[in-house]
Picture 1: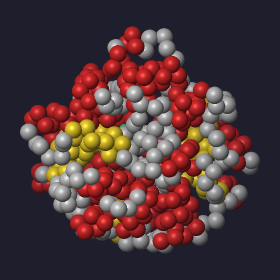
Picture 2: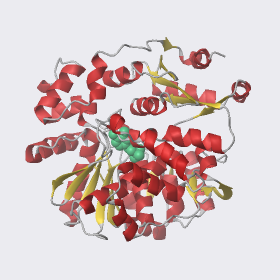
Picture 3: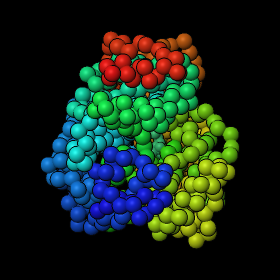
Picture 4: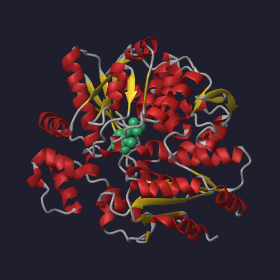
Length: 499
Ligand SMILES: *Cc1c(COP(=O)(O)O)cnc(C)c1O
């Protein structure tokens, strides 16, 4: 299988090359040139496999240039019981006869980004070897919180890689900051930047586009790369868990083989939900996808009207990982929906760049709404969803998952759809403990309390265990306390690389 660019399909490269490059030169994203299929018999066969075996099976369909040994190496290093605190890796929780949560947050940073970022470093270093690159990979990340920590954990101590993460001095939560500055590993570095997220991101972008600097790095046998969500190596591992959930439900006799399910995904960059769409194209039986947004509802409007328009107010919400106005992975979806029409996609992306909006023709919109529904919700409804679910079922969700639950409840009220439904649960409630506790106990439940008191309180109320990785933050040594000016980021990288 070869990979082509969404903006120029005459480009044809291997999976290893696509993962190494990340983004195509003309700005397009890499997609497989055909969608592999998985039969119902093969799906039934997944029942008796563990998560690693399921991952190896699905990945082998896409990474056809990887050997069995290479795939095993990647999968077995990424999805360990130690890192995920459960051997199920991505367990399914049954809420009631028709609602199931696919818990994607048992990894080391307590959010679903671990599902991809635990394996990406192995896919990337294997891809480097396969394409005869001997340089060491240097990952640069600017983060507003979650991605930086997940990338640090993923790349820590992975041979042939180094990682430097920049975060805005006053732009991340206390827990997020602690997670990053206590990071262990021989190949990691973390630095605060005086400024906001944009300052940190612009600094990283400047380094990435500085050709003289990249040549200097090359002379020292280093190659820059990013752990960005547009890389195919981040998307493909996400396809696995939708098959895994279906296999678990089959195994538990919750569904019959071939029975269609709904999939609800709290969406920001459109990566997670796109992965479920790939699973469907491969043969996973799906009735409807429900795309859930918070108040930043650009995708809800797009799916309901066919018009994408980012010219709107940006809202800061209690589900911050979905506070996004440009959903970059939508480009891949448009490419597939339009029957791989690269010039059509290039045109839309140019309009998005120039005018901030575009509209798709009615026939393509109809193809989309035949299988996609969408809805949005606000912070109050999100808090209410957490409270109601806890009161009714004793199950406590994080804020992002609660957006999905709230949108799903509205969808059922409107449509009466009784199809069994899997809701992607994207973060541990402990990661967003402040908002979750407000939902459960009102604002007095959090007033004047520090993060660690809040963790304990949430453990009590939810009857859940505090994830070890968060509980241990309190006593971990703070290893990275430096702060740099936004103009000094290159020097920070140089010092770390000792060049
Ligand atoms: C990143 C993230 C999302 C959004 O996922 P996309 O793939 O960007 O759509 C949802 N929830 C949480 C907790 C996240 O970290």
